[in-house]
Structure formats: C-alpha cells, structure tokens
Image 1 (cartoon, each protein chain N blue to C red):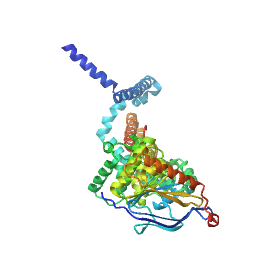
Image 2 (image 1 turned 120 degrees about the vertical axis):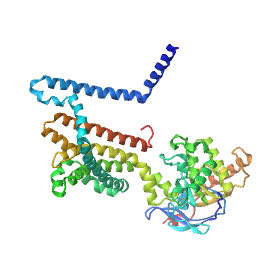
Image 3 (image 1 turned 180 degrees about the vertical axis):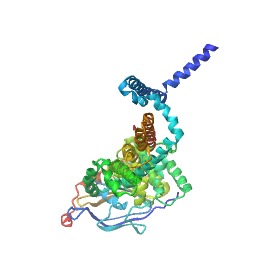
Image 4 (image 1 turned 90 degrees about the vertical axis):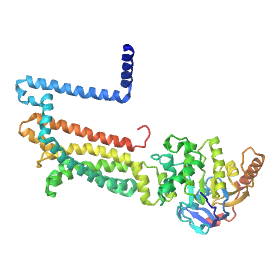
Length: 263
Length: 273
C-alpha cells in the first residue's frame, strides 16, 4: 500500500449557494505540497466546511477550480476521500464489509479486496473486531472503521470534516495521533477542518485561518514540530499559544473591500 | 448408583425445560391443545343435539379421519398446487410492481405527492369488488384470480417499501457516493440491504391479505384449488372434507407466515427487533 502524496492547487475558488444568498467565500487561493497535513481553522460560518466539500467533489464551486496534480476535482473519487463528523457505517455489514465497501464499487478481485481490507483494519488496530457487527462497537471504534474505510481506497488526499469532534477527549487524542502517523507513513495529503486549536497543532504541518464574510484565508502558520507530538510538550504548548493569538486576531478581521465584493 | 443416574437424567430434563425455545414450544402446544379441546366439546354438543345431528362430521375426529382419505385421493395436493400457483403468481406480481414503485415513492417527493391520493383511494376498494371486472378483462379464471391477489397484495408491499426507504439515513448515500458508488451501487449495495427488512414485512402482510382473498376468489368459476375444494365438499355434503380443507388452509397459511418471519429475522439488521 504505497500512496503518493499530491500537490493540491486551489485557484480563485468562489462559492455561493444561490444567486439570492451572499458569497460563502471569495477567490480563495491555496497550494498544499505533496504529503502535507493542512489544517483549516475558523469560526463556524466562515465557509471552511464548504471549502472541504468542494475539495471532496461533493459540492461544486461557483468560480475557480481545485487541481490535484493537475487533475480538476469535479466529482467524488476514490483518489480523494472525505471522512465525516459521524462514521455513518452500514449496520447490516460487519467491520470488514464496511471497510471494503468502497472497493465493492470498483473492479477489485476478491483477493485484492481481502488483502487491502486486512491491511486497512490492521492500520487502525481493529484486527480483533474484523468480524464484529459495527453496532457493537464504541463511538471511537466506529470512527476507526470509517477511517479504515477511507484508507482502503488508498487516496492521495484524505479530507476530514471535524471527524473526532463527537468523541471523548481520550479517544480523540489517540485518533489524532494515529491519523497523522498513518498519513506520514503512507505519504498521502490530509486537509482537515477543525475549530479545535489543539487538533490543528497535533495533526497539522501548517494551519490556515479562515475568517470574514465572505470568508477567505487571512493568516497561516507553519507547525514545524517533531513527531510524535504530545499536547503537553512545551513546543506544542508554545505553538498552541501562538496559533490561538493568530486566531483571535483573525476573529477581529474585517476585509475592507468585502462589502463591494458581496454585492 | 441407580439413584445417581436417575437424578442426572432429571437434571438434564430440568435444564431442557428451562431452555427458552422449549418453553415457548410448550406454550404453543398448550394453545393448540385448548383449540382442539374446544372443537371436541363443540363436536360433542352437535352430535348430541337432534337438530344438528346431520352436521356431526364437522367434529374433530371425523375431520382428522378425512386427512388420510383426502391425501390418498390426491385432493389436498392438487388443491395446494393450484392455489399455490395462483398465490405465488399474484404475490410475485405484487412484489415486481410494488417494490420499484415503493422505491420511487420513498426517493422522489413529487412522485410520492403525485401518487399518494390515487393509491390510497384504490387501496380502500375491497379486492373482491374487482371480481366482475376481472372476469370481463381476463380470458381465464386463473388470470382473474391472480389479478385479484396481486391487487390485494401490492399495497402492503408498496407502502412498506416506501416507508422503509423514507427511514434510510441520507448520510449513507453521501458516504457511498464519496467512495465512488454509481447510482446502481446505491440501489444494490445501500438501498436494497437497508430496506430488505421492510420489504419482507410488507410481503408478510401481503401474504396474509392474499391468503384471505384467494379462497373466496376460488369459490367462483374455477374447478381447482382450496376454495373450490371447500365449495365442492359443501355441495357433496362431505362436511369432514370441508373442515379438513379449512384446517389445511390454516396450517399452510401458518407455515408460509413462519417462513416470512424467519426471513425477516434473517435480514433484519435492527437491534432489539
């Protein structure tokens, strides 16, 4: 399971839900190099989740485009897979069947499917539960199944929409570390949306801050820390404080020309 | 030594009796026994009342005696084959028509609004009231009976399918599409397994209705099937044959229903149900 990272290029991305509503965000430009873990943070309503849905091909932009190694993202694809806030597993399937469901939509032989599913289940450390009914698992285990279900596709880009926000602090922290270490080992890109500063510092290589209405990227901060990261490390704490300060600054941000652009 | 063996056997028996399946089987047998006793008592009164004495063959014992007789003549088998064919064809039609329309109703709002009133209206018409029309339209009696069964059975299947689909979590579609599912995959891998339970529950209801419609539909015209066998027995005054056929209808109906109960259990992913 060798996954290459990919360069993500967001060019002049604009989104509005309909002509009657205002613009969600306007002319967003962003480049993420291969293998980067990028955090998008911002308050609710700044359009960060919409941006992620466009990256997944679930929503279409009004203007602009997203390129993945030069290929435009216009529809969902196994190459870019999204993980949602809740696991949304299929309750009539076992853990293995849930993990392999994406492969069943493509042309994969039984052997290949089995091999990939076994490896993905191992990555999320659920070997002992492969044959279990997903309804018997805890919330954290279910989200691990959802992670394995995404990893089995060997995506170049994994998108995460506040995927651990519904979990308890302990489970959340262990999943954050696991996602980062798996992504680094396999080399794929991550883009994740969060309003949790800790999550951005633990999982990200870089954080961009979205603010304003219409939203845009107003700040960015490199999170240049060694792995593995722990929230109690002094370096992590220091960066957390810096990111928090930047975030506060962004909260007061008013884009001067925003009024004319929205019109 | 002897004593020890006996007590071990008793222990085994007690453990067996405590087993839940054995217990419920015991209760079921008790229920059937009460039904048989009531029948015996009824038969006794009929036999001892001079005004009803001619109907003595309605009793339990003559009825039980009629079974080997009818089986030997092949009457039970023939009636079951003819009725089974009509029931099966009617139900199959109801499923083939009801499930796709039910899926459309559950999936597309305007289609649901569009069809709801006419369907609810037609549903409330007693299936048997279509009989004269069916006889005019269909060339054969078989055709009209199958039509009557289908029109009786299609509604539970259709509405159960639509209701099942309305309960399906839309996030499942989002997840599936996100992993590269095409519309056909959504249908076969998400919708169908998600609603199999509801469709089977609808089929179970449909079977009940179809089984009820079948017998009176066979009272008219046809010369085969369970309804015909009952009508035939009445005309030839073989009352024990009549009751034997009635009991057969009960047994076979119960058996068919248990098959569906087992299927529903097998395909249900709902917890605690």
